[in-house]
Structures are given as C-alpha cells and as structure tokens.
Image (cartoon, rainbow, N blue to C red; front, side, top):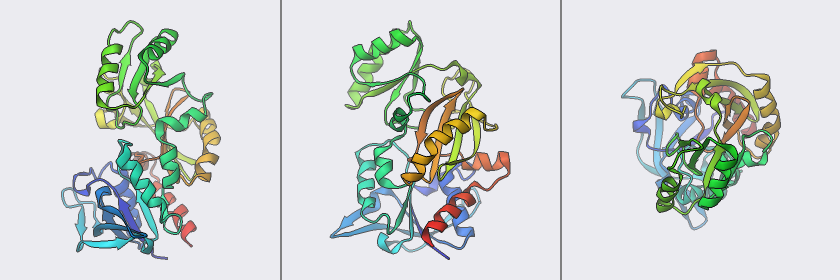
Length: 313
C-alpha cells in the first residue's frame, strides 16, 4: 500500500547524502512506492483545529549536489498524511518541544515517528536515568558546588550541555582541572538549564559504539573512534566510523531498554555505549543508518519501513 509520507527536518539542501539518515529513510520510502512531502519545522502551524505544514512534494536521488527535487509549495493538512517523520536535529529547546505538542494533535491517526509525546518526555540524556545500573555515575545539576562534589568523588569527568547534540560543548575535566568554574559561568550565561556530568570512561579511546534499534530490537552497531587528540567521538567533530559487532553486553542493554522503547512508539533509536556502559538513548534524530548498512551489507531503512507499514495496514 502506497503511503503519504511527510518529513519534518532541517533544510534538505545542505545534507550529506552519504551519511544523513533522513535521506536514506526517504530514499527507501520512495523506492517502496510511497509519496514524499518535505517541510522545515518553522513551517509547521496549528490553525483552528487543523495541523498545517507549508512545504513541497519531494523526490530524492543519490547524486551529490543534485540530490532532491521539489514540487510546487503548498499547505498540507497533516491529517491527510499517513506518516510524519520528526527528524530535525536538536538542540532540544522550546522550539523543538513546541513542534512535539503540535504533532501530538494528529498522532496516532497520522503516525508520527518517533511518537512526539515520548520524544518530548524522553530526551537523550534523561531517559538513561531510568537505568542507573547500566550507566556510568551521572549527575544532572546547575549548582557549581554540587558539580564540584561529584568531581571530587569520581575524578576525571565529562561535562556537557543537557540538551546539546553532535558533541558540541562537551568537555573532559581531569580531577585537577581548574576550568570547572569558568565553564559553569560560560554555560550559565547561555541558558538556565542544568548541566550533565558523568564519570570519564577511558574506554572511549577505543570508540563510542552507536547501536541502532528498530522497534526495540538491535539491528547492528558501528564504532565511532575519536580523532587524534580528541575525547569526543561524534562524527560531526571528526570521529571515524568503524565496523563492529554487537557484544553480549550490548544485547543485555538492548534487552533492558527495548521493551520500553517499543511500548512508547520509539521506532528508530540510536544508543551510545562506551565499554560496558550506556551513556545516551537518542530518540530525537538518531544517525548511523548509512554507515551500518555499508559495513554490514544490510538494509536498515527497509527494516524501519517494514515496521511502519505494518502499523499503517
């Protein structure tokens, strides 16, 4: 059955078609005979009981510099769409949160992936708090003395924004580093949000594993190795993807968190594992599909669409 698919995403013109997961999902949808519609988050609106998105019919092709075509701009009633993909990148700010409230009004009659209610309530660095035995020692706090106390207890730590992404604003602080107060002052001048501090895991030098789950089941993983002189392994900041197999520990973690993800409508999820420890559960706009497909010669986008199509029958 051909479906009408809408993508709420960042501007499509600047994406890397060899790495972008949204492009791969759209490409697979098109190959399966579904029609595509594209709009950016600022084009989403509530209008007298209707949820409207002003955007464009979309077609995609794997040609660098010429990877998409747009039809005539139109206002689409999302009640007439079968599936909406919530795929803009964080920061997970009030703009992002507002789009989840608006999309709540059409879901589940229009299937929103991932379920916007639980995307809003399960941001990546907070959902892991429900599984403290799977995670390294973690603190979320804004008070400087509280953060200092945590570092005294755990030595080297990672300090990062609670709602950031892509490795931006992530700092490793040794037990003797004197910059904690300055960083706290810097972050406090930007927003009123708490910070997240975690015990530093030396195993990150061997890589930060991204495990992909589809409807709560692990389908594979890639290893992201930090660039020389870097602590961060995010590919946005130069991390190198490598082929890697799932370990028994990875499967144990997925078995614990998978049922909750499935129950809450989180169809496409990417978790981060360093050594034996779960550090993030990414539900907003996870990446890694294309690298995994190339390394393992599998069609992950197909698996995702099979789940969605089954729910739309």
